[in-house]
Length: 347
Image (cartoon, rainbow, N blue to C red; front, side):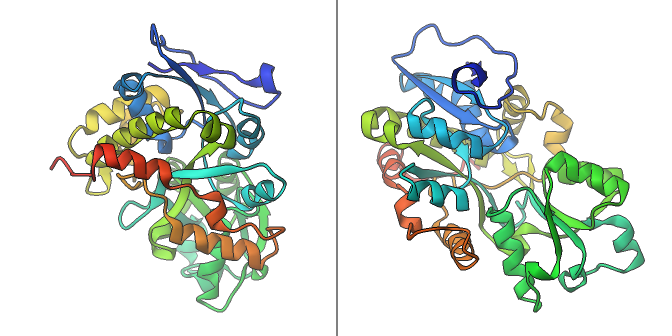
């Protein structure tokens, strides 16, 4: 079962932890897994809750971080083995400095109707007709959560289709909770919001969804699973065990998807597990939000990551000559699929 650690004392990073549930009585291999606690970490939640990790002889200790950027240092030193985060400009720059992390599996995507992120605008701007399309964002206050991330690349890509760039917007940075508050006060015009912030802001009547993220870039990869170099080199067999368990968890999650909701086979169990492990505790919310998509075979969405890399390179957010191929390692997914076979839906 889930064991959560607070890593503040040992590595000096900002982390928050939930109450620990009982751990396994015995496990041959201890693996430290860093995660943020959102719904997109569901693959590991299920793998732990349903005993898939334990069946592989793995004892997982989940370490909660407030951002994926803070995972980089402990992943590089080997204090953390596995990270649940994203590939961004900082990842490539860290690689250039010799901090070698590898994206090894899929975590979250906006695909088709399963677009858990959306481009939103403040509701009064929509109601007045002032903002009804991408072109109307010119000169408007637009925020992202960080420079050099996937959302920055996607919005730039979308703006160019209507003859604009991010230079034409009043751009700044703001966290998700701060964005929700800024919409309520009228201080923000537009941004990309993920669930559950998306549904909450719409329900509050402060924003309108202008377009789902998948309409801006379909099959957009917003998150990946990362292995530290020390984990790969020193414990490759354990790394393969973790991957087998993780993919089994992903498949249970994908089985539970139906009609843009968690409403398929096993959905009630999946909702219960997410509520236990994530920061989203309201099961009604989990049933009502648009869930993310993930490849049930765990394969990394390389095409989407290449588009992000091209944007980072063009805008000089990446220093040096590190390529996407250097930070992706598909061997662990390939090994897992040899044992598990390809995904076959339950329904």
